[in-house]
Image 1: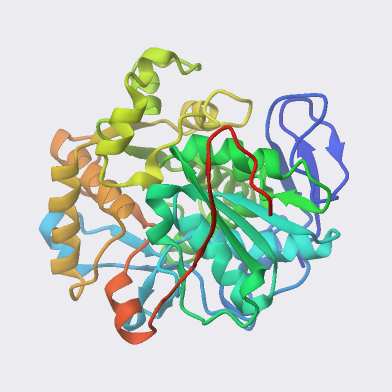
Image 2: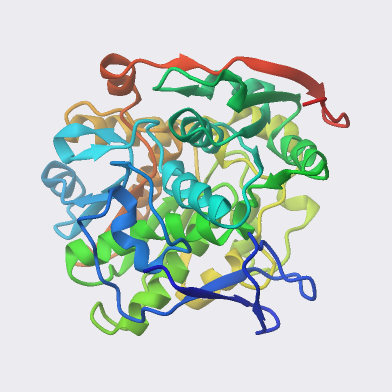
Length: 413
């Protein structure tokens, strides 16, 4: 289970697995190639690890966190889409969804935690705009994995766990006076110290393949790959992950040969990848994100703000979009808010993560403009939700701030 080879997308060479994040000779992503060419679902394994055949790990962790795919009858009727399937990764017990931190970032954190332990260990350093950091904080309190989390100061309120820390020193939270890109820069400087391992972001195959289980779960539940896949993106890593998972499913042979069209959304007024894609440009330009700081401050979904996404590199977002087809959408705060209410009304009052509301608004836009046919099979990736239920039923413990620094500083941790 989980036997794999790492291959450089740009050069084609295989690479050793030593928590490898990149190919030294080329600038592109690395990708996993699994020994299992057909997917065997293993429901006896915990949570996401039912898909261990296509995860870059050999072991598991005790968890109930996994994506769950279902048809929302009310949402189908409201949008006139009888073949709409929701893949939900959050806290929604009535739908058998038990992701305690409310975000699909746990799908990334779980295999990454195992992969690091299987390849030498160390202190994980994670840059985040909120949800990723919270997922790794939960790993730290559940499994004792030491982590340094670096977030913009404005995101500190998003850092909490549902388990009281038994080892408070396992989590160190650094807040940065700046935005997400500044947090990434500070985290990169911390990883230069011995014993500190970068989580890796889009370069981390465990993170991408963990997110890819959304596509796997959708295909297994529906019985085929969808025609269309909708998700909101900041870095676009989730779109890359969906594409890679779809290519594996196409090679499997049992879920169809045509990969889904990707429909990726960003939150106005910060939409650099949307701007580039509308011109079919492989490169992001400065004019794609004018007044970036001001624009980032105005979005309702801060997790969708990354000034340096893996858009242009080999294996990145642009290549995924060109391969799959589809479109990108710029979604206003107002439209996202309305879409979130629509979903909540359809699904027992479940509140959506702001990014998931952006994705839902993009689906509504695609329906209104005729980008999808009402008969098409569609997967809507709801990347987070159920926070009110988490607070009510599980309770939360805020992660205390260890230090606050400027974007050009390196904290003493």
